[in-house]
Image (cartoon, rainbow, N blue to C red; front, side, top):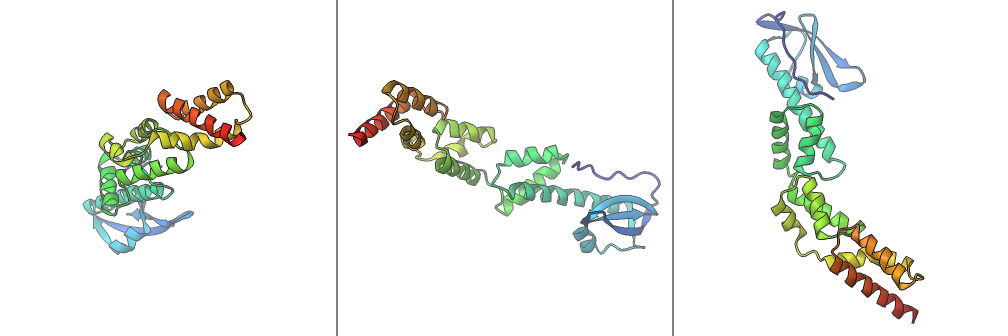
Length: 225
């Protein structure tokens, strides 16, 4: 999807007449606007209704250009809303996605401002969502979680605030518990190597890994008697 604004050529008179309004093929929410017998651009059906556009209405070129710009703004906002409808997104993610669609910086920033006003984008809430998701389904270290958020464009101060009092010791234990029980039949060296490797991939430090592995090994020994 490219968001190129309509460019008017010299064939338009000072006041141009709308000669046809036709629904887009397969896209009932879009209306093709014909001016002086030629296709000019398409508009959202809602804009057509809001502006009271109709066949034979005369509009200045400035007005037609304004309508086209308004449509681009609304398409940019709609694209952003669709993107965040699947899950929360950081501002960076929204900005990057809209840029891929071809929207310019002005329209992107206007869309983000409107989303902020409506509480639909908020980097702190996004960071909390991301951290909670990791905590529930794939515990990892504060460092690695912070790195993921940094890659999502979240500011360092926001990341630190969202991480709060999260404990690497607790996360490492929860991350390794299930894996440890799968290894309960292994000898000590194999148990330590595999579990340490597993925790290392999740960004935990040597000290945290060592403490966690020893704790789990002792728990399994106690269970086995």
